[in-house]
Amino acid sequence: MLGLIRWYGLMYVFAFTTAFLILKKQMREGALDTEGYKASEDDIFSFIAWGIVMLLLGARIFSCLVYDTSGDYLKKPWLIFWPFDPLTRKFSGFAGMSYHGGFIGGLLGMILWCAVHKKPLWKWVDAMCVAIPLGYTFGRIGNFMNGELYGRITTVPWGVVFPRAKLAGETFSASIDWVQDFASRCGMTLAAGEKLVNLPRHPSQLYEAFLEGIVLFALLWFLRKRKPFDGFLGCMYAIGYGTARFVVEYFRQPDSDLGFRLSSADLTAGEEAHAIYRNTSLLDISTGQILCAMMIFGCLILMLVLYLRSRKEA
Image 1: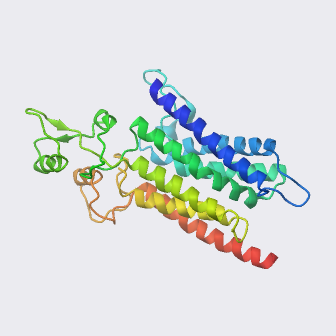
Image 2: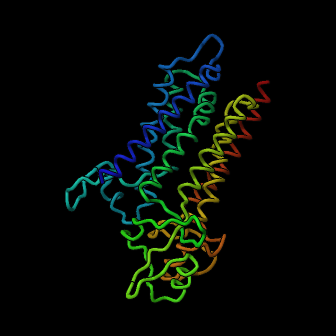
Image 3: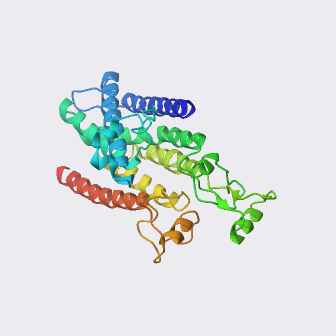
């Protein structure tokens, strides 16, 4: 547990520090200035602080209410922010944070800050959305180092065996023919008497770090001085993230207790439990993909509204 806390803490420090430095760079370029007003470092600290607090609240609440299937948090909502196991009373931390909840919470934090401080919302949202992706990269690297949020099983040469998959009981019986064949294609030699096999998986955390972090940052950084209207970069961030995450979800393993929200076929419980480990159909849609599709659709509409407003004000 201490190892996980250290990795999380370290990556959060890297992420927020990176976001601050990029936001500061944009401040020096005048991206946050308005007529008669020049943004300061104090403004940036305050803006980020509001965003972080609301991001963490949104990420935790959304995760507990959307991804938890036990119903415990609905019956006892105070457990959302209770860091101790209710049965053992041991410290368990706040395992479970949702990106989409953090997105909503962070956006609300920025909206509130801009309203209170009377700053142009979409100008500040644009600058923040340019700063987020590179910092987000560190979060996914932290997931990889922790061996969590791993991908589906694969035979690609860069497949990784994650010990936490074994701890989670996501291993496969060595007596099954397809498991033996899969292990053979991976170059694994099953020991005599071995009952359970922990197969290699896609390092989907690194796929996300690259696409949703580095690639998206490079795109937004290139566009930052070329945006046609305020709010454009914020919409591009959400559309770009949603698209990248939607694709990576085909390689990332869905939550075993949720499975697919939409499936290509009527699967029994046993068949779906097996299907989530392998990419059998592009029509098998996870919770994350549905949320990403909603994000993309919503921001396309918002982009159109902001564009029409900018044309009207021109």
